[in-house]
Image (cartoon, rainbow, N blue to C red; front, top):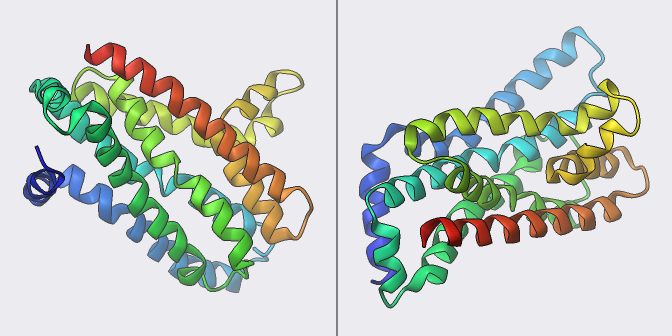
Length: 234
């Protein structure tokens, strides 16, 4: 089983499957909407204080969308028993998952790289932003694995994907909960994605540390979900 064959099969599926197709185009629609909406909002209110948060939450949400699309592909292949076939093919399970997770990370990274370009009304230090964007893009393979682990089929996947959307509220937990209850937010990568970018754009210190914690927690969750998926498959 060659990666080229997987690419061809995926392209045929993407053209037929509206949900998966929109998973690749959805982030672009979101960014174009924000690019058009922000200048209009600026005419009627002082939104400067909110713009770093808009960029931060956009950076957390963008990977969620292609990650869900790849998660649905994995669920379909699990449902049809294809993953076990890939696992005994020359591609092996590691090769298959590497391909799938790269297919989730790459579009997320591209969209996040375009984020400061499309949202030209926000000044972002490009080189520092690249560190945050690369880490934030790991949310796409994380989302794909979470769907594959928590759902049994595509129908369940739709429900799980909506439930996982709650994690995007992690950066707001300190506003709603008292200590120590809001500390649970620190375990979620989305918290560090948003707060790191907010600190970066606002010029506050600590954004580099937030990027490091972002990488650490993405890595820990990815490792946990990979081990769980391996047990689920076999």
